[in-house]
Length: 441
Image (cartoon, rainbow, N blue to C red; front, side, top):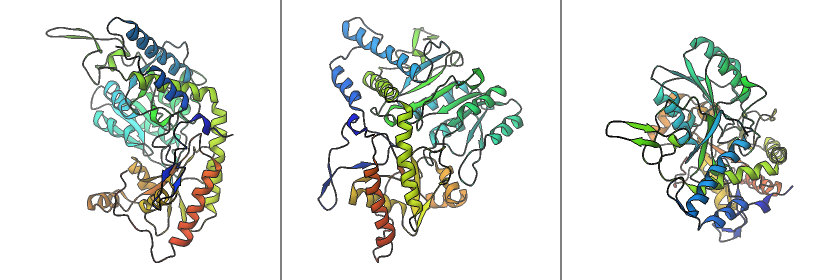
């Protein structure tokens, strides 16, 4: 089924290096996604409804407050928590901010231990390194996590691990993590579980309740801009009781019940963690996008994206000089994320050629997951460090990541250009080496 009619801006043409105008192809959905038409319409319909949220008296303020609070219910329902009093929604500006808030709130002292993996985005690693002692579970040769290794670390820590924080889906290989199985292990050893849902929520149904209490996800974080809504909004969905005793990550107006000369009474959860004037449009757009995905149906989303993923991977496997990362034989636990290189060609040059010659947006680099990418490339920590310090940046990959609106026709354009790169340019005298213009990653 073609879902393109649901999206805004994806058919606006761009000019290529040769002056030709083409419809661009966004295969960089792992970084950001275009907005749904229903989302942009909601923003347009409400653009004149500026009003203070939970402050002041007046019709616009009351309207905005009502919409703002109703969005929490929509998000709770999206994660299977309708009518559940244990969890709440805290609005953030991004998934990264959400994980920093949780690291600050849940880790009480520097001796507390946190278990995470070498598959993680930096956002689900670095905040916890600052907060306490981090234990990393490594990946196997294909880049997967073995949950038996997670249990071994929990046993070894003898109750000192307070939080297990894992990605719901890798932004490098697309691997889905068995979050409910990991939740059971975390709870068995008296730890909380956090799921970094940035790459997950737009592609797979997430029922935070699981099948029983032991499988319940304690906290999940995500960003709206990876789920067909604008930049600048995200959320934490999590247990209220474990946040009650924590001071806010940011402080100021809106997060206090009372301020006195020598003391402060913080607001209740979730307002305690929402200091400052809120991003009203970002919040209602985020909730609308999730509601729309729920209406489309995750079975439909999964089937559509799976067909494109398998078609492209199976086609790439038949090409010469392509290096694919992750498991390309058993793909059921992979989302539509494909990382690759072309032998003897610089990864940045490949992505730049695709963009300038065909209008195809890809990602080049290490995708804010450096330790994971180094493992998949077979690069040691020492060599990776030397590469960065020297400014060479020779170690990296190209990533294609798909969304609901992408099509097989787009896949064919990508594959044709890939075939040209591997069989024509690679053999020519004008080999594509590292471009002068640095592609940031």
